[in-house]
Image (cartoon, rainbow, N blue to C red; front, top):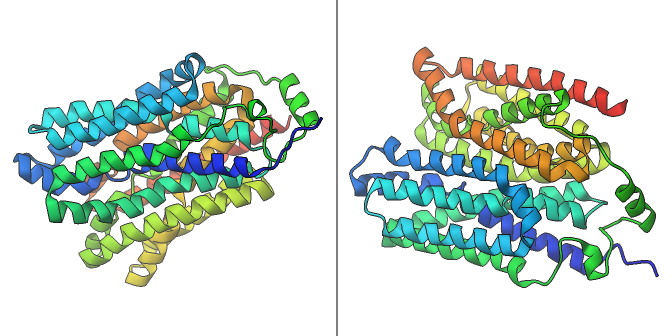
Length: 403
């Protein structure tokens, strides 16, 4: 008897993964900046001193990502979701009760560790098991919810802070993180769809047999993996620019209000480009879809550099949001392509460490470049250089993959 390869359950699992992306990334990472002003003023500390907790959070995600594969081998994935969600929720409640900045540092480390247990690595592992056909679309829809959560939660939490204070907003954030994970916790499904009497979406028995018989060699020190890791870190470094767009706007004589709109435009570009790259990947492959996004990013950089008109910089901000589609969706799809599904968890855990470690310092690095040069021009040159380097790396990796 042939097992069904298309069912409603496949899409319910995807919805569960959307909730996990919103909980582990959207509520954890994309809402951090909402609290900077109110908490730093309340505690009587410099904004940078309080913002340092975001660096600790990101570094915790990076380091725990290294042990995530061992946790996935040792524990049931549902248990990891429960524990990770509990740590994220409880750390938000701890932040609500904190009276000093060192308590925020500890809570941030706990939150980062919890998020790393059930964020992109676990989410994409579930998707890779449940989807064969339309895996690009499934991945892009799911990971776009990290941006959706950030877009929805940021104004919501801002309103709560204004109405009831930042402590109440942290309590609300903790509850929201828990609620977003509940579908994945409560809905009955296994990591392997065969245990639910199903094949991966669009797969066949023959394809499954070939998959189980095929193996791809992998070692962390092999040249192609080191090259891919470098590319992933450089792609992630590019995402450090959007937080500087309000400052860039003022540096070229554009109003602060337009600078804030540029950030919003980038987030809209974040969500829409993630959906686009998945659809492109299913039609033309992961590498070509990333090439398209690289061209779009380069075009936006040239607009930033040479056309200082409000309407144009807003358009440039929107299309620059494409950088998030590569870091969230493109890198995941290329990891599977270059190193095989059987090595995905092992390879992506190292990639995740590298990208999160790089992200922890990218924003400040772009800021220091401006401090030393009094211009964002060199930042844009660096981004174009990163894209050029990565283009060469992907050409090389693609050539080796074809052999």
